[in-house]
Amino acid sequence: MASQLKNGIGFVSEINVTPFVDVMLVLLIIFMVATPMMSQGLDVDLPQTKNVEVLPTESEHMVLTVRRDGKVFLDEYGVDDMEMLEGYLRSLVKEKNKSLFLQADKEVPYGTVVEVMGHIKAVGIEKLGVMADKPDAAPVVAPPAGIVRPR
Image (cartoon, rainbow, N blue to C red; front, top):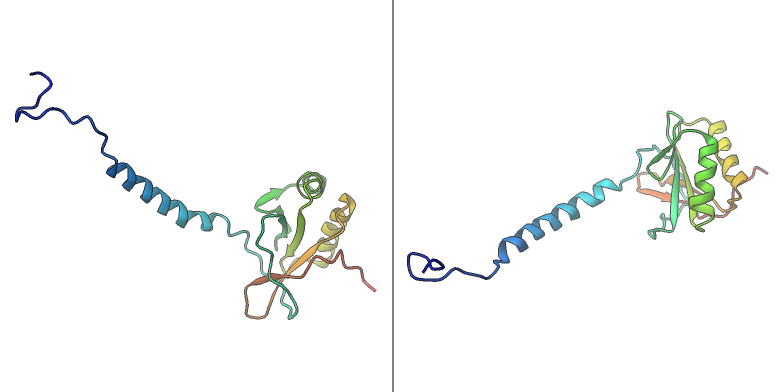
């Protein structure tokens, strides 16, 4: 008698899955909405040009960013000095055979961009894509055709 309720029906020994499914669906929706916001990248005012291609969507590339204030980032991770940058490039880009794309704010001095490109070349990365904007369009990238040398 102790295992019965007052109305004479025994305890229900089944698990009610409906609240569990409701909570999982809410969590799924939260992650679906939040994930794209976390991987938007850094805010850089790119120079504009007419002849560019869209950045590849596969994850086999990394983006090296030089912001207006001169700070350097590899994807979203800050780099404190150029020796550290070379180590990251060697271990994360060259050894894993990933493509590297450089995006620099159009206000960054040319000398800073050339210095960063020199460190990329010192690591042994021969192919480097440079990111730019089409006029009044989304960010795009020039194909990686090697480091451009002046003629």
